[in-house]
Amino acid sequence: MTYTNVVISGTGSYIPNKTVTNEDFAKNKFFDEHGEAFESSHEEIAEKFKAITGIQERRYIEDDQLSSNIGFLAAKRAIEDAGIDPESIDQLIVAHNFGDVKKGTIQTDVLPSLASRIKNQLGIHNPSCVAYDVLFGCPGWIQGVIQANAFIRSGMAKRCLVVATETLSRVLDMHDRDSMIFADGAAACILEAQESDKEEGIISIEAGSWTDEEAYYLFLGKSNTKESDPKVRYIKMNGRKIYEFALSKVPQAMKSCLDKANLDIHDVKKVLIHQANEKMDNEIIKRLFRLYKERDIPEDIMPMSIHKLGNSSVATVPTLLDQIRKGTAEGNHSFNKGDLILMASVGAGMNINAIAYRY
Image (cartoon, rainbow, N blue to C red; front, side, top):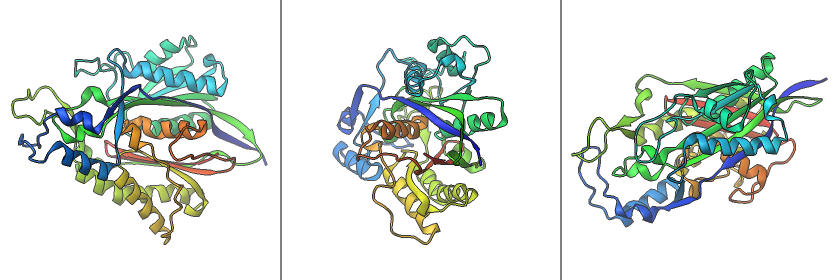
């Protein structure tokens, strides 16, 4: 039997050079949502923050860089890794949330789309390479992969480039403790159809959107300082609500993805989950295993990058994927032929998705 599989043939990422430690936030005065200053010292805030999120430092782009610039760099590396002619790409899909935001402004720029900008920077002339953006919160890259998979399986495309790029440092309220979570970064992959006598690549998918009260768990709002201009808005989140939502919904979505392929957690070698909060991710994996009445969790099943890279939104999962493929991931993780990888994310919308992938 011959299978037509949708596989990842190349990956690339761009990790910004500027390192920002938790101690670097000591110069910021933090206020709560009512504009009241926190009495705790920065040392106490940073210690508690690290204990919950696992974040020690994060990366920011340089002043002259933009989301589309670093997305281009990641895309170029993915194309080189796959060894393909960029003119052969049928779909160029770019996941982000805020577009290009120039240093010193808070205005997002998505005209033209980041996909058009990245296609231009790559020098792709083929008009049949359709370039467009995906706005799906932090799960945007996985959703872009899901769309690419659909195009390839339908016969409308043979090869797709899916890029994730985000520069959250440009939309932060530096008087909000939550600003310490966010980071910048970009990553990309090439997906293409390949014939094989084994079922490989994307095996199954799961996705969903919760848009009742959950729709506004992440939003744009004014700075936490009382004197701030209410017309100038920054990324805000209801951390407690997001945490509770993720724990109640994400494990079941991951299980549903495996169920569709008649697989279970014992088949999974690696779980690449959105790097939003280490404590939350650890609890998600525990709850996933409990759905299988299993309490013994392999120590190496869930690689992490959040300690040094922070939360770069759409870019966390593909960056981790690229690091493991290239042997640069924290913890000496690797993929072997035939490994089953479960990729999952949760974020603004609120949206959740997952992919079971046979390496």
